Amino acid sequence: MTATMAMRGVSVGEAHAKVIVVGEHAAVFGYPVLAAPLPALSARTEVRQADGPIGLVSPFYTGPLRRAPAVFDGIKALLEAARARLALPHRDMILKLSSNIPIGRGLGSSAALAASLVRALYRSCGESPDPFTLLDLIDIAETFAHGSPSGVDAAAVVAGGMISYRKGLAATPVRTSRPLHFVVADSGIPSATRQAVAEVRRRLARAAADTRLRLGEIGRLAEVAAAAAKEGDARRLGETMNGAQRELDALGVSHPVLDHLLLAAGRAGALGAKLTGGGQGGSVLCLAEDLQAAERIALALRSQGAKATWLAGTREEAAL
Ligand code: MEV
Image (cartoon, rainbow, N blue to C red; front, side, top):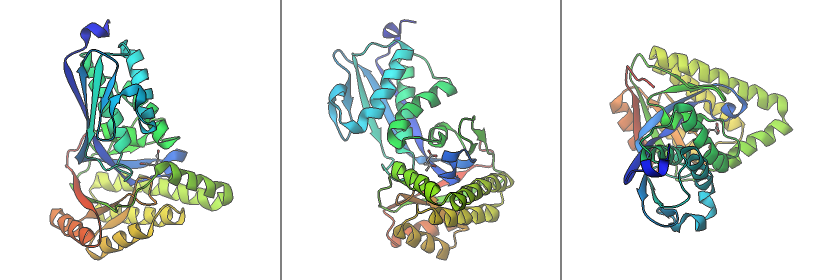
């Protein structure tokens, strides 16, 4: 294919945010993890044909891509790999990146942006990437952002519903037999997944037996959580979330502000509540009995200092 000829005027790609329901950190070591989409937030890339060197338009930087600051290194590497696969020239396009996913809040902002870029680039050539290529390319950008990602963020931002995931394997859809109602709250504290993952690795070196036990327990809880979600057993799912939070706290990836929000969620009637994503800041995820309860919990979290809240639900027939 001569992709230069196939390239279209303006092409758009999008991807939504994600939440880890149970299994973060253990996922890095190959344990199962349960994740869900957060469609209230998304990233978008517009690829426009324009003569000249590749340009970037974004809230952080606008100008030639080659002069973009280091935060765009992952995007640059991804673009190079995608360009090579699509046989696109190294010029004549402008990439316009936008996203309402807060950065550094454990909600998959970097993976969603990468996914939207891949989709837009392929669309600009009249193609759509096969799932393996899509994940492979997102992983290039994610390696810059997180060091050694498990791949769960990439899998979750392109999935249409809840997924069960294990490093190196294809995600499997988790269809819920009853709708589930989640509340996500931004603590306002920046979270650096790379540092949180490094903290767990340090613990593993320092206290190998204890850390291994805790990671294994998180993996076990993720499996129970997936089964509970399938059965629509919200109470059991909530218990697994609380259990995972205890382990994550012991692994050193919680934060006093998160602990405060989790307490508030419990008081407001959450069936389960935990940090979501890398932790040490970022966001919390709460499970509610129904929509009204979710709205009540969101209100309680905002009154206790959460910077923003979003609702996420699964449909009964949720499919990947
Ligand atoms: C980040 O959303 C989840 C972590 O487990 C890292 C990873 O799995 O790559 C903390």
